[in-house]
Length: 49
Length: 307
Image (cartoon, rainbow over all chains, first blue to last red; front, side, top):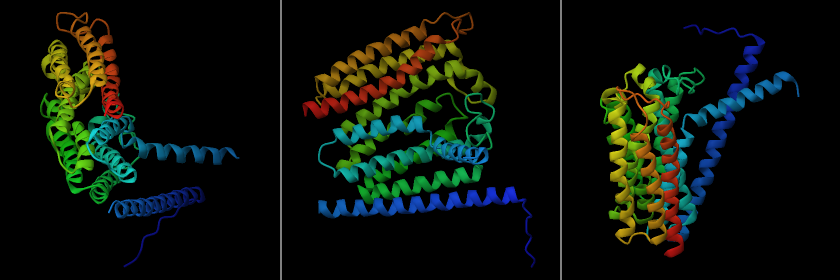
C-alpha cells in the first residue's frame, strides 16, 4: 500500500499548521475546563453530603 | 504587527465567532434567563456551583440543539435572506464538523447535568434537545403550519429543567411556566413570519402566512395573545407568585395585547398584504422578546423579595 501525499505551498503549510495549532489549544482548553468543572462539582456534592 | 499577522488574527477571531454563532447565542440568552428563573423560584437550596453547572448545561443543551438544527436546515438556510450568512450555508464551517460539534455538546450537557444535579433534570434536558431536533426540525418544520405551535414546546422546557435541577421532580408550578412559554411562542414566531414570509415561501416551509395567508396569521397572533395573558396571571392567582409579579404580568400583558391588536388592524389590501411593510408585526416581534424576558425577571425578583 502506498500513501498519497499532498504537496502544499509554504503558505498553505503555514495556514494548515496554524489551524492545527489552534485546534490543539481548543481541545486543551476544553479538557482543562472539564477537569475544573468536575473538580468543583465533586467538591460541591461532597460538601452537600 | 505586520498586515498579514493582523489579517490572520482577525480571521481566527471570526472563525471562533462562527462556532459561537452555530449555538444561536441570542436564543440561548432567553433560554438561560427562563432556566435561571426556574432554578430561583423552585423551593429548596441548590449549591451555587451546582446551580451554575445546571445553567451551563441548559445553555450548552440549547446551543447543541441550535447547531444540529443549522446542520439539518443548511439547504433551506442557504436560500433564505435571513439565514444565508450563517456559518454552514456561507461555507465557513463544514456540515460534518457542525453536526459532530452539536451532538458532542448535547451528550456532554446531559451527562454533566445528571452528574451535577439529578437525572430527572438531565432526562428533561435530553427530551428538550430531542424534541427540538427530531419533532420540530426534522418532522414538523417542513410539513405543517402548526410547526411552531407544537415545536414551541422545545423552547418551553428550560424553566422546568431549572426547577427539576433543584427539586428532582416536576409539579404544577413549573408546568405553568412551561405553558406560558408554549403559548407565547406562536404570536412571537408568527409576528416574525409575517415580515419574513417571502423567505419561507421560497424554500417551501409551510409557515402560517404561507399556507393560510397574512390575514389569518394576524388573527392567530391576537388569539394566542388572548390565551397567553390569563395564563401569565395564573401564578399570581394561584398564589405561586406575589403582587409584584402580578402587576408586572398585567402591565406587560396589556402592552403585548396592544401590539397584537395593532398587528391585527394593520392597514392591508384585499389579499391581506400589509401596506405598512409589516411595521406593527416587526414591532410586536421585538416587543415579544422583551416581554418574555421581563416577565420571567419579574417572577424571579418577586420571589427573591417577597419570599
